[in-house]
Length: 176
Image (cartoon, rainbow, N blue to C red):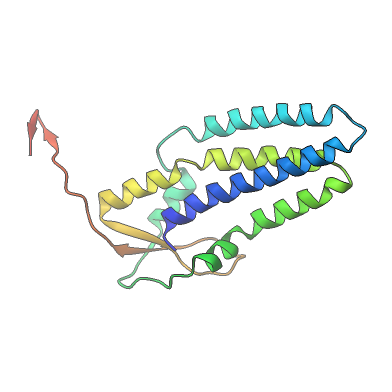
């Protein structure tokens, strides 16, 4: 799976987790005796959205992604295309987080409300990383793919040759 597509899927799945957890919070809060649960949760979600938007506002790659790209292994063949397996392999913590927080709504409805805020922060903080990686791929003429590894080991990337974008550049006022 291409790393750019993995980053896009991560943002979308994090937003989906936030939506699911927010729905569970509202449903559990409606049946709760505590009438302040939903308004306080919505306030936390707004704060989380501001935090996530602030973290994810820059167009450059984050230092962990830059390190991951720099450590990519150069290969000449395309890896296997198994996007579903790659997503489950790398994003199982998000799935576990969502299921546990959603399941605990019956014991304490504030837990999925708090978890929703963190999923909002995560999705907004990562929202521009795919564009930054795509720009690096275009500049360097390479494509980065997620290498199949154990779910408990750090992520690794493969770097394959791609197409480099040739653009006119201005040097001293003249187009070259």
